[in-house]
Image (cartoon, rainbow, N blue to C red):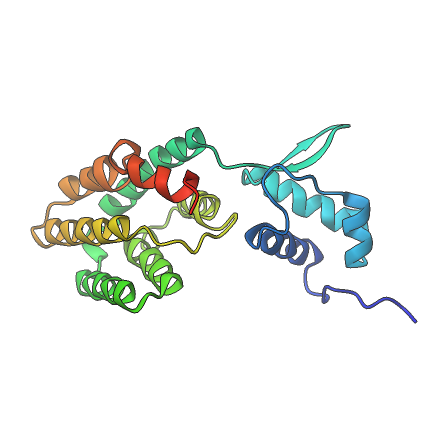
Length: 221
């Protein structure tokens, strides 16, 4: 009896990428662990070509390292990585806000921020996470620079989804909601430059957020 293929036929490279992403997300593939191409291709019932292509994409996005003759390893997320990601995201988001300022739906941002507040009371971390991304996408997705959007999305995946942490730091979540409200108030006053500066220098400031970052990523529960 033929072995059942774990992947359906759509785009093998994309499906292998999603499979590996889920494995990292669920910590089936832990930071520092190696990925055996022979074993993985055999398990999935595919050739090494789509697997190699998926791994190249993951390496370009910073999730794995392909070391010739030494293997393929899942990258750990270091404090220095996070510091660099915050700097880049802050710069790009602040730029996106300036360019999208005239088209921003402030009422939607207010609603999303209120929804985030409700999720803290209900204890729904995944919904908080989703609403938080939607809040920022309210202005990021309005711009035509798709390269900027792709970079920001990839860096956020690196921060939040590899692996995904369902962990409340309620002081941080509440602080984010307060900062979101400050962003909204600056937008209402018609101050795009000041809003962009706040996003860059406060909301996405590693120095400002460091105590929360350390607690979220590196302190044991």
